[in-house]
Image (cartoon, rainbow, N blue to C red; front, side, top):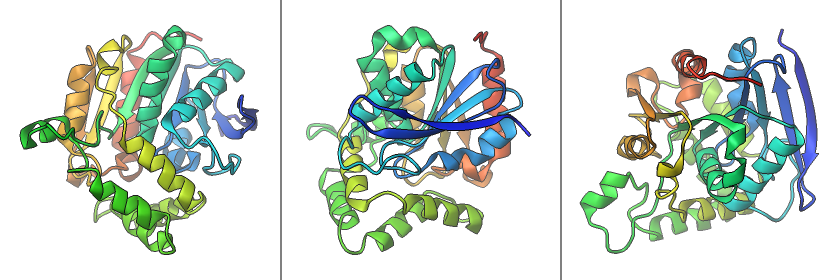
Length: 292
């Protein structure tokens, strides 16, 4: 059994973030960033399988999982600041950041806001997230598909946010989480995601998702100057695969890997097919000259 420790860090605005670490601290560092309204526990099939080879850190975003249930800071920019404070307080260097969904946006925002801190990063991994979720009013349908926009206009997500913050939020969330998996997904995996999703206050979840959908990270991608891996699911309802391919094409030298729907290529592909995902991640990391 790999070494396991846990603790908390306090952010500059006084919020306690819960973290866990697995594996030998002398081994290459990986920090796993969860998606919207999910928890660090979503990575259980990764840290259990990879902690013999790497030193893995997971943490819960503010308001998520075991972190403090604060009533402020539910913006991507604040989550990026939280990430930076975690890296500093835990003295993590030569790190590979692995983001899923919202976690990708947090990494892109961190790269944008803290360029002088990029020297602490060894490589980056992005799972099933596009760079821009809402099309601009002047874009053609071809442009919208090219970038992999998730929504046709802002009216669609706004209606969802309103329902998410309303009295039927549990039912709304249930359907949304189920759509993050393929029809062949394990019921246990889907139910676990639902349980983790229910931990966060629905109004705060709606506020965070509203902020998440409004950003455009396209201009950040070409500035990434470390090895990068982009992974997308062909069966992902949330994220058009074209958008993931576009992200990979914009990051200099990035590698792209696609999971077919038959391979569990959903939004939560790393949960549905951990064997393939872990093997790809391990292979990618082993090609990097990581030193700690």
